[in-house]
Image (cartoon, rainbow, N blue to C red; front, top):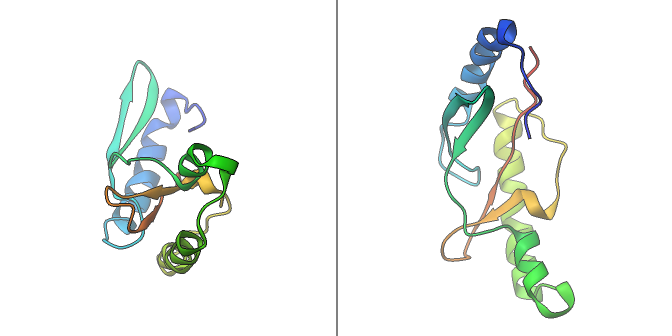
Length: 119
């Protein structure tokens, strides 16, 4: 969730967001950002719809445990998403299962993040 941004800081925030937005316009293991908007005075970040996260999938499984084959597959794909972000100069600290999104085929994991944008 984004922190509230005062009206007088919205232009500064928008410029910083555009800088980060341009960095994230690449394919790979990172969730594609579509843009930013304001709605009823709140900032909204638009991104691709996901079928759910790894955390959601774990919650649906009996015992909350993933099969070893999925753990190994996700474990190989997820660091690639983090590596892509680091190569773009974006440092992410909020690594948890609910931030790793699954694609339509449950084949790859996409890393979802809201970057820290200081105003």
